Image (cartoon, rainbow, N blue to C red; front, side, top):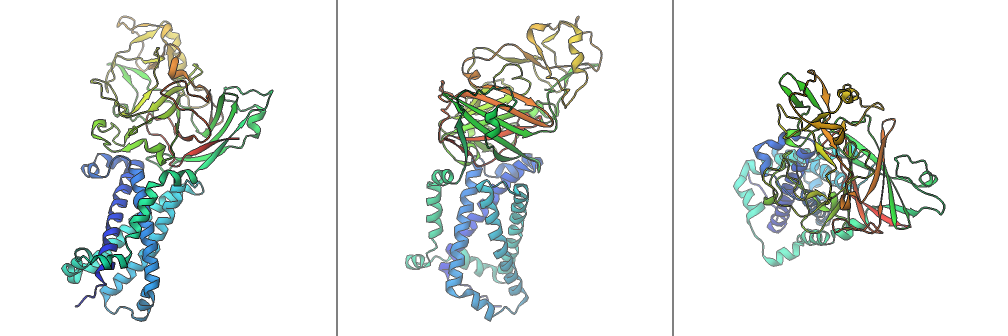
Length: 531
């Protein structure tokens, strides 16, 4: 059977561009899919071959290329009269009809796939969980259409079809006439102007001056008159590894040289049991599921994070690198990736419900370029580190972490100190699983007379953090299934590890529901606007 192929100029360039865009979109999309939903596949050998690094930016770039290709293809199809010829001369063979139906399905799937992708990129909150499911389903449907299309085209005369589609190069005149280089030019321009495009399409968080005579207290209670009139901006964050989404309400204010933030999000459980120790017949053990991989998601405290940047690139100014990242960062224990930036600094606030409890501050931190590995360190965090402090606020109450038996560093001065920890609550009766260093004594086997089944905190409070690490005052409060965190800091940065928080600064937020590293996230930032 003779197969008629269209002119090589149209086929070669269009198919090469489409193939590159399709393959890279699917590979980067698969990396995002397994990192966010299919965690079990992260350890598979084939996952090591998927794109790594700033995958979000790559996926968006090839998505834009696909969008322009589809637009150019639709215009050419209309101008050339292909629709009319298809209607006037319907295919007669079964193979040709199958290919036609596949192409028609693709003409529905691809626009929907691109529209859903644009909506996800734009940060739209309406029906966002369903948009993600739809986008993934459409991607798998597109793969099926491509496979059927390839089989239908090449089953009869596969070698001739392959040469016509990919190997016959037209002259430069035909290339110019075909004008299929337009998608590359437009996509390259969009990539170069991505900061401008991102900045022009983000939502604003309005920061107003607190009226004279009013005062804001960082106590986790939004009972001041100003907060009653401040309109919140809601950001819907996604939890990797599940279909859960956590909306976060954000309010902001400024009073002279100080900026205030109020963050509020739903969390049905107040999780304050941070890797408790339990006495067994063999000794003390750490209660955990995946702390050995630094990916604990059960026996951990609730946390919250905010990051600031002067650049609007998606995913925290491209500060998360999937997979192995750069060679000097290695692979993270959770196999998902690591936080770092290629240059510059991303300012980070990290609030921890147990380890920051009672200190009145959060852990001021940052994402920088990857730090060198330190031999023997329990966890390598690439570019993520707490800002410097001359004091050590907390300590783990075990010498070294082991899956089986650990030796505590200290024991309570009085066994009665452990009574509040023998029942684990996740409601208003929950207590922070921590002890003061100064109300304990060094561990000795002779003093270890606790019965089997005794629970003991693994967090030891030592002293207040100071200098750079204590730049931001903070207090979190859980009530009726909701956390509220108030934070205050000077508008002007007082450290080389911090950024000024001023008009035009971008921010992202993340929630940790009794999770060590698996936090919710959103792609598009909010932009601070002073009014």
